[in-house]
Length: 127
Image 1: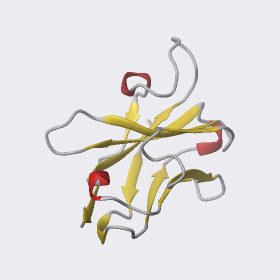
Image 2 (image 1 turned 135 degrees about the vertical axis):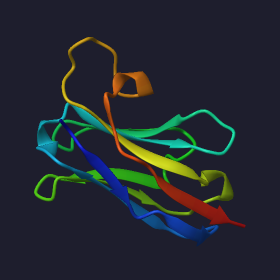
Image 3 (image 1 turned 60 degrees about the vertical axis):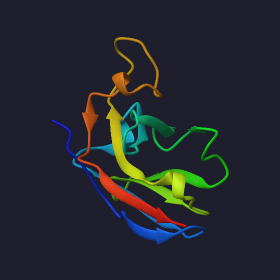
């Protein structure tokens, strides 16, 4: 079983930065893809960013592109999300997710594509 544990959330003023971490219990470099999602109060969970196997190609939602960076450290088995120029609308619970392989089709953007999830970490951005 894959276990994912997020950390690094907190409260910050608009314009500030945070770095989220997601510790993977296994071989992160073997994951087909990993991603960050977020869920704001009263809203559905939404995709934020994806990174493909071994820390390769990265993709971002338009709302965070240019401000957020997804990366991974294979030696530390940890996924990161560096968040800069934070806005109040970035306030949400942030979740990391992992997909082990491409069996079953689908991609790496929809939540349904990911069988493994962390417990979430709260990010609050005040104006």
